[in-house]
Amino acid sequence: MPDTNAPPVSPEAPGNGPLAGLRILDMATVVAAPFSATLCADMGAEVVKLELPDGSDPLRGLEPVTEEHALYWKVTNRGKRGISLDVRTPRGREIFLRLLPRFDVLVENFRTGTLARWGLDLETLHAANPRLIVLRLTGFGQTGPDATRPGFARIFEARSGFTNLAGTAQSGPMHMNYPVGDMIAGLFGAFAIATAVAEQRARPAQPGPEIDLAATEALFRLLDPLAIEYEQLGHVRQRAGNRTTYAAPSNMYRTADDTWVTVVASSDATFRRLTEAMDAPQLAQSPEYATNAGRVRHIDALDGCIAEWFAAQPYAAAAARLEQCQVPFSKVFSIADIVEDLQMVARQAIVRLPDADLGTVPAPCVVPRFSGYAPPLPRTGPDVGEHNAEVYGELGIGEEELARLRGEGVV
Image (cartoon, rainbow, N blue to C red; front, side, top):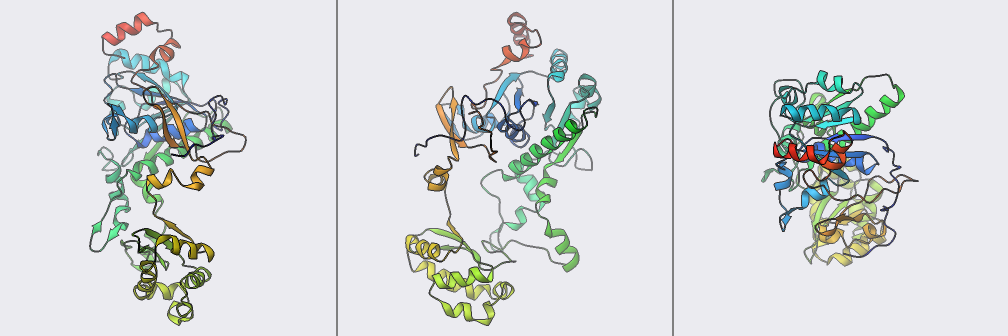
């Protein structure tokens, strides 16, 4: 991986980000809701990660691992301090309620009703801290017939309509090899926290809101035209492989040296530039291809011509022509390509996080970038209870009492 200079983060930079001063207690598990808190940490919030003392968060057990280190955990929970506490026990619940006044936001993703069964319903939480913002990120929300159903990213993706749009008629619907549904829900969670904080700062006397975020609704929110298309036209949008049913040409093509290239040339001007790159003026002059609608209708024949052009030459030659004619395109990048990509290197989009086990590890930089804010270089995700002494010390719990609580399985 290339070395870079002057990274867009600084180990010594003060916590002066847009969310500086915000304190978040993240008691969520796995990916979606913790990612919300991580994004806030990137923007300067102080985040404390609360886990059960046995370290049973499923994310710690997910591949990939090396030398028994959970790599996924390290990067997904970056920038957080870590404490352990079993809030299901009476003593753990008491300590938890003592912690809450020190935080502005609580993030949780247990099945609907779980915290209430543990004696931590909303009324109890707000009795401890009336201004506490509570983000509840679940698969299906706090209400409705499926409120208590469990779910993971692929369940949300399938239920929201996302999965139905991926794949081909022959392959059937397909999932990505990545929990994109969790990450999208996490983005909405971070947005919800920032929105609630802005509202609370504008109205200081207002009690803390409960945020009901359903991951399935978060994904469906991104599919704006599907419902109106179905109601007004009777169309059920389906998977179309690497094509789109609304713009053409927009597809993926294979070069002579087995490189896959995505091209989008759906505007009339861009299509003309593509035909110039292909030395195929007859395509631009054909009435069937004069408009986007026409190209969509005749996409089989058009795609055949484009595919032949790509198949006849190596990627470097095709890329040079597309670049020369200003046609939007990209090789399909793997992570091996990304870490060497000149654009990513120039923007220092991959940073190295300090890690107690591995020295440093690569991770995406803070996104987006704010002028005047140099994000502190975050450490990787904490070990179970790593900062118990620090955090519980703020409550006046000393090492002797902590040792007793550890012996009782409370921390």
